[in-house]
Image (cartoon, rainbow, N blue to C red):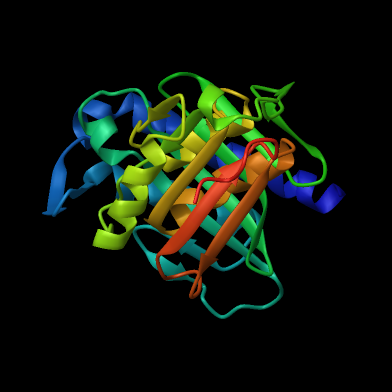
Amino acid sequence: MAELDELLGIAVAAAAEAGAALKAHRTKWAVIEAEQGREVKIDADKKAEALILTALEKRAPFPVISEEAGWVGAERKGSFVWAVDPLDGSVNYLRDYPHCAVSIALLRDDEPVLGVVDCFVLGECFTGVVGEGAWLNGAPMRVSDIAEPASGILHTGIPARASADSMAKFEKRLSAWRKVRMIGSAATALAYVAAGRAEAYRESGSMIWDVAAGCALVKAAGGVIEISGHGLDHPLEVAAGNGKSPLPE
């Protein structure tokens, strides 16, 4: 669809601008503003968010739900909403650990239809439009063909909003998969499933801005996703996979 292709280009440009700034100003921007439990807020999150919101407002002014600002332009006219995580993996960025990303998704009727995950430190930009395809730095990418969890890799994490019940389920997952990876960036982890580097992703308590772009990528690359919860501004249960191996519970 021409409209989605154009919107993908807008998201790619916004993510690239923010990623370049995050990379260029890391020494100055990697300053902790607040800490709550295992979460940290750093100066970089707000600065990158401001760049993205300005870019989207100029070229595609749909309502936005973003990690730092919450709802922006919340009067919804039409079916499109941007979901923005200006810096997914803030602690990684703070510690100079390379798995962090700018994540921008477009939702239509609350379903992810396109996504951009710009892993600016590693120079990898994952893009996709559901129904059209997915790409890594412009080259087509697809989910893997591995069907057995015992032969596959599961990406997961322990979110700050984890409950006792979610932790019990987390422990159960560990024994089912050949390898389990926790890299500290949901957007990157989902992009890796889309690129065939892992077979599945599962996490409890994620927010829509954490996972929307990555879920769009997985679906665009031939995989499957499940997102459940009580609205875009509440914690979610998220699973994604290659469609061959079962989705983790």
